[in-house]
Amino acid sequence: MEAVAEHIQEELNVQTVFTIPIGGGLPVAESVVVTWIIMGVLILLAFFLTRGFKTRNISKRQAAVEVVVTKLTGLVGGMLGEEGESYTTYLTTVLLYIGIANIIGIFGFKSPTKDLNVTLALALMSIILVQIAGIRAKGVKGWLKAFTQPIAIVTPFNILDLVTRPLSLCMRLFGNVLGAFVIMKLIEQVLPVFLPAVFSVYFDLFDGLLQAYVFVFLTSLYIKEAVE
Amino acid sequence: MLRIDINLIFTVINILVLAIAMKIFLFKPVKDIIDKRQKEADEEYEKATVAKNKADELRQQYDDSLLKLEEEKKETLRTARKNADSEYQRIIGLAESKAATIKSDAQIQAESTRQQVLKRAEREIADMVLNATEKMTGEAVGGKEINSSLYDEFLSKAGEEQ
Image 1 (cartoon, rainbow over the protein chains, first blue to last red):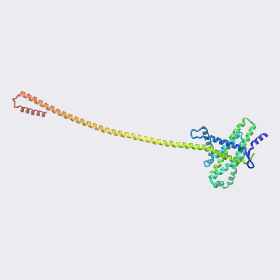
Image 2 (image 1 turned 60 degrees about the vertical axis):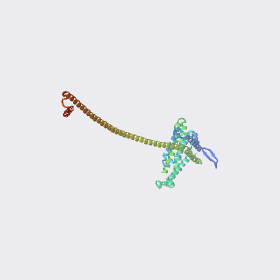
Image 3 (image 1 turned 45 degrees about the vertical axis):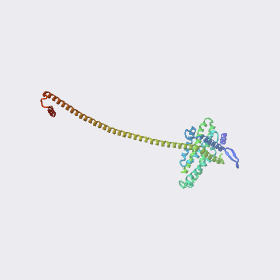
Image 4 (image 1 turned 180 degrees about the horizontal axis):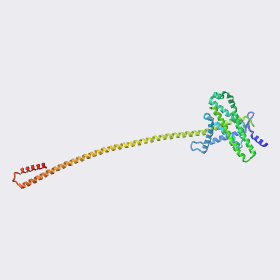
C-alpha cells in the first residue's frame, strides 16, 4: 500500500522539466511541455489535413476534415447562440485542447489538466472572455448594470460569481481528471488484467471528453448569458 | 502537488497561440472552402435558373410561332377554298353560258336547216307538181308563168293551213 501511495503521489506531482535562466529562473512544468506537444500535433495535423482543398471532387480526407470541423463548430456555435458566434473558434480550440489533454494519458503522457496551473489558466481565460463578451455586447455601462440584475439585492452574488464560476470550472476539471486518475491507479492495483481496460474506457476516454464538453458548455452558457 | 506559478502564464500564452493557430490552419481554410463551394453552388443555381427561364421563353416563342403558323395555314386554306369556289362558280357559269350558247346556236341552226329543208321540199314538191301538171295539161293551159304562180299560191296556202 505504501508503494501505491508513493507511486500515485509521484504521478500527481508536476515535475519541472527545465528552467529558463531568466531572473531567478522560470521553471517550465511538465504540463506546459505536454501542452506544446499537443499544440504541435494539432497545428501540424491542421496544416497538413487542410492542404489542397477543392470545391469539387473532394478527397475523403477533405470530406472527413470538413465534417469534423463543421460538427464541432456547429456544436459549440449552437451552445453560444447567434450573438456569441464570434467566440466559436476559441471555444472549439479549448474543446479540442481539453479533450486531447484529458485522454493523452493513454499515450503515456501526463495529462496537462492534472496540473492546477492549466485548469486555472483555462478557467481564468473563460471568465475574462465572458466579461469581454459582456462589455462588447452591452458596453461598459450595460455590463456594469448587468451586475444589478434582475434586482439590486443580488449584486453581491453576481460579483461573487466572478470568483465562483472560474473556481468551479477550474476545480471541476482538475478534480475529475485527478479523481479518474487515482481510481484507475487503484483499480490497477486490485486487478492489473482486463478490469483496468474496461474502466479505462469510462474514466480515461468518456470522462475526459465529457469534462471537455462540460467546460466548454458552461463557458458558452456564461457567454450567452452575458451577451443577452 | 498544488503549485500555482509562472506556468499559469505559460499556459495562457499556449492556449492563445493554439487558438490563433487553429483559426489560421484549421477553421479558416475549412470555412473558406465551404463558403467558396456555397458560392459556386449559388452561381450554378443562378445560371441554371437563367437558362431555364430562357428555355421557357424560347419554348413560349416556339409555341406562339407554331400557333401563328397554324392560324396562317387555316387562313391560307380558307382563302384558297374561297378562291377555288369562286373560280369553280366562274367556270361553271362560263360552261353554262357556253352550253346555252351552243344549245341556242344548235337550235337556230336546226331551225334554219329545217327551214331550208322545208323550202327545198316546197320547191321540189312545187316542181314535181308543176312537172306533173305540165305533163298532164301540156302547154295547152295558158302560159308557163301563170301556172307556176298558181301553184305557188296553192302551196303557200297549204303551208299556212298546216
